[in-house]
Length: 371
Image 1 (spheres, rainbow, N blue to C red):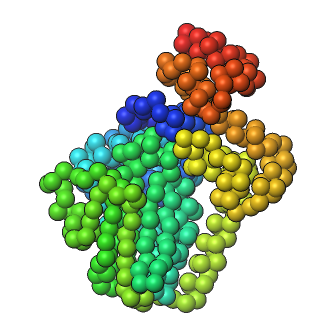
Image 2: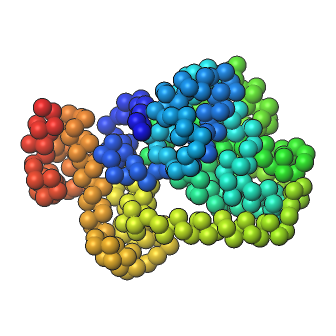
Image 3: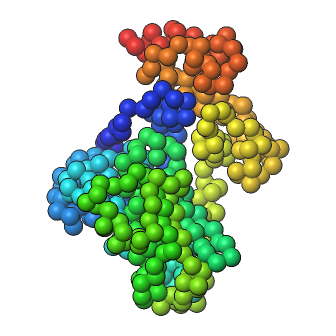
């Protein structure tokens, strides 16, 4: 299958963004970014409802109709971006994410959706939907937190997604937020208005704002630190009209089984690399910080990596190598500046490390890849 990549805006030569793009384009890490085939179909069929021809959509996204109809394997980040780009262009609908999410097709998220449908109340449905979210997509981190009088759902695209493909990331976040709002209405059998909605994205054009307000309510603000939906706990305690205790128990157990299987399916070193990439800001995190994110001790982290024939330093250096080669291929930054961006105290130390990784000095590698 030809997974066409649709590039986002050219990244500026700043450490965090270059690091993330370097990992993406170098090849290895991209394969761990996955989304369920059912969600790919949901985006494309939403575009078809808006008037886009399915054959042209599939072709533009590098997919075939046979794959769309029968394939249940997960797709990667590049394919998701290509699908959103094709869907937006051919549908002519800039609010496609909002419209697709508002359709509330629980079956698109499989056992997670069915668990929500059979939950005892909205609070449980929202908590389970967030907790099991990575089963159908590893690109969007959805968290649910509860305070004394409110419950808050937070939607954060993974850094590799949000910074490399900002248009697709916004559509995905807005689709998920629209799904939550309309899903709770449907589960309650009546409108359940959020107390407040915050978007981390820029305000839309003036002619689009009424539609946002109609969906999310009057207390809606953009350019927030995170995208969130806040509900009153009294509303979230509303019973789900389709609640089935026996089905909920079975589905909840199955979703938990799938989540545990997913967590243990990937090599531990890949899980460490995943956390490293999420933590990278202007420096590389300590082993203690990564271990904390994985809920293990530093000693256990090292032991698990040792069992796979590697160690924390090697995983970290793999990430640094990916980033360094990207800088050298795609920018004209001096080697000394690249060394600084990679947290090396001296250019000579970086040069020796780079030669150990690739067999070439940074300058020689740049010349080789430029020819």
